[in-house]
Length: 399
Image 1 (cartoon, rainbow, N blue to C red):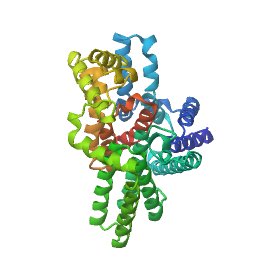
Image 2: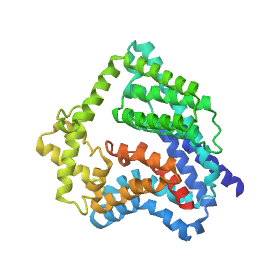
Image 3: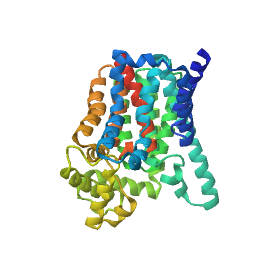
Image 4: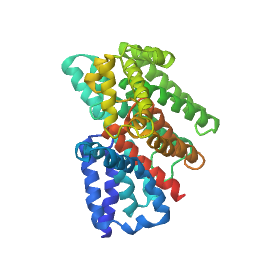
């Protein structure tokens, strides 16, 4: 039995490594963990008082399930709940697993970072082969570069990995065996990939994190003047090289337009215009059913009707979602669902600031991404969020 439990612990580490890589591998590992815990799970843990508090995380799945049973069609809409099963899977299985969170969490961070490194190199190698065959530099940008996930989500993974490395450099993460040189190299690699992915929201969040962490590191003297200068010089070289590419220059100009004039954008075939019209449709639809929402899956149907009514055919044909997780949740589950999401992200993030800084950073990154993406509507977003959010939330309660 102990051998099986040790095997399950390795599966958790493998899962962390697989998240930035090939999505089916992540699903297979989740299934293996589930099957193993059917044999070795300590189900008596569930009824302990402290653990009942941990299960509040499952509200993000249970609330849509109850709503679907009461006002929806379970047979027709069950597939929407299936997509979100990770929100139920990780809290229950981590609770019943014989998993020493304090011991293994640093290794989970390390495996996730190494998974991001592997994914980055594989993307670059694939782009290099495409460049050789097509003789066009477009193979190094956006979706042609990101072969495993949508660029926005891959950039999110790299941003969080960078925040772990920066936290390790400044405060140290006991048990995470990465030296300073390795950490700096990985951060520069991630910075390069994030630039090439041309995700504007990722650029803004990544820049905020790096500037903040470097300022803290310099102030606390965690880096020598020479190391600080080398990092700044390397960043300048990376940025200068990237800016020499026409596509990067165009996206940088778009970032400034998006930041300064986002509310006035109406050219909806662009990503900025798409979000502007999606938010308009979301606010309008929420106003007609603010308390209960429209039910899981029906929110997007309501948006689609609005697009058709207003003549937004580009959005109608693409079945565009709210492009904002807070609006998406209010649209599907009303005020109660929105309050639940805000509590488990923003409120918990503020609470964790004192003793769990890395959790606060994680939830800060997540909350900012929620502003421009309906993250919990896709497998990439749900698995990443529920996996790390469960680990952090359990650690916060245990402390």
